[in-house]
View 1 (cartoon, one colour):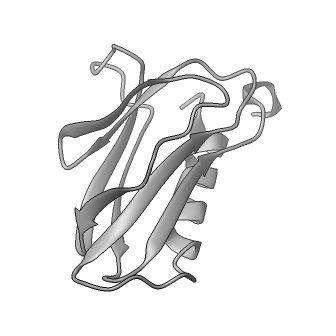
View 2: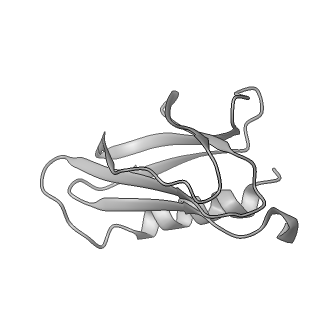
Length: 108
């Protein structure tokens, strides 16, 4: 709830960032935490942690995922009992995606 605008930015960036093509049946994803007043977060894809404890200014290297639908969830770091956001995203093979958490929490 309190990260709704940040999570919306993550989802928008992930959906719209497929402009750069790669080869194969995978997609390549990286995550950027660019919200200065947000807490550290964990990002899960299909029930598996892909990013843990990401703090402001943290970013990941690209990591592969199979093309298709994925359930993406965002939690406060270390607290999987509090779901901040959950959405199913479809990503296309052969693309690179950057999911960015932006904006201030106080702007919600």
